[in-house]
Amino acid sequence: DTAVSQTPKYLVTQMGNDKSIKCEQNLGHDTMYWYKQDSKKFLKIMFSYNNKELIINETVPNRFSPKSPDKAHLNLHINSLELGDSAVYFCASSQDRTTGELFFGEGSRLTVL
Amino acid sequence: EDQVTQSPEALRLQEGESSSLNCSYTVSGLRGLFWYRQDPGKGPEFLFTLYSAGEEKEKERLKATLTKKESFLHITAPKPEDSATYLCAVEGGSQGNLIFGKGTKLSVKP
Image (tube, rainbow over all chains, first blue to last red):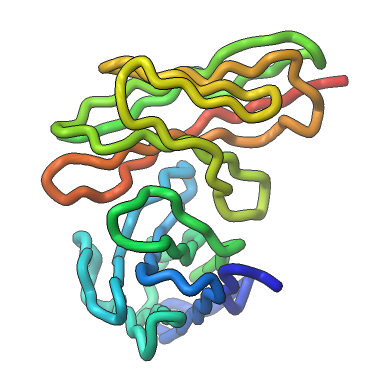
């Protein structure tokens, strides 16, 4: 059983389109995250939710909107995609917001043409 | 500004050739330093947490140490399966987010 699973693994789309990435964790964790890893391999936090409540919202364009229907799921919707959005997006979870021990999904590679 | 710098960017070793990876950081109020391993096409996998200067953690051929300004990941007698990118992250600062370094890509040749 995969602990943190995200779908799809690959997305290829045109500029201006809207896309969503889904994430689910079966670890019973309270906190979930979205990270972006760009072409230079920097891993940067985008959002963090604790028990469905948004607790971290880094400087991310408001075209990116996270949604957490329950504490096991955190989805990412991206509107009006731009070339610079091309990256690998990782979902992660942790037992709570106080620990830096994160469990990551395998990533979703987004390519915007 | 809080930041994490890892060196070298890439390291090629022969099997059995021990070495160290460096992670230097500047962060106000360090709450923890974390090491992760990332294989190609996969998400990072947690290895160690270090909380205070002088602390050490070990796992198989890996040993992580922490000082007030940097951390080292020592790899003893590495094997090809240790090949991966090793990421360092610190938690602290005003936001308390995890701040990742760019990683060190380790290649171990048989």
